[in-house]
Length: 302
Image (cartoon, one colour):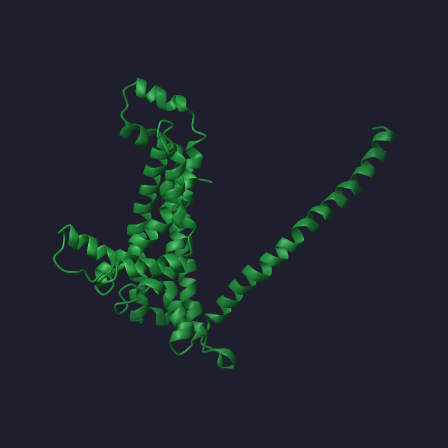
């Protein structure tokens, strides 16, 4: 090793160190922000879940809040309702999003831009505004009942918001309407990068459109489907706005979600922030467990 190369290495080390400091400087604000607004509240909520009461009256109760979950009928109702939304709405929404993306990826379809915009538009509307609109649409004297009466499908108005089953169905319709277009955009973007020759070869071999969908489109979109499934699962477990503004959790607790129960524990009932934090950590636990299950089912080893 020559003296020149030794001198070059000696000069290079301070430069690398200086570049490292500059890099950390750029991300330092982000790290601080994430720590303050994400990690710190999460840790505080975990500590709070072992306490009971609010404000200065908080007292340490150990695992009492977690034991209380198993004897809380309202929590059981909220958990059951949330799983019903999850098991019905997420698969239906993803299936619709896949179908729409395939149809709107057809280059021969006229007005593709209009249809893409129309289906995606609900995703950018105000949560509260669209929930209130759905509340009026599905009211006893709302547009939906009037339409069904006019075409003689029903002979008397349906109690969409007062019947436990119909109220759940209304919530499912609302969140499916809002989020289908959002997921469709992910699939549509992925389909733009698929080699068209694969579909041409499949057509030459005699594959039907249905066979192409199941044996070409779905396998190629598998990573995107996994991503949207996990994100949709997280969103459904956190469902609040639609339940709050359409049914207010009623009738009774027939449409109550976990997030709305947390809100009620904090602001509607006698405030118990400790127990509310405990219920919130149920969502964290469910998100982790369901995400792991979805990765295993999808066979993703990464």
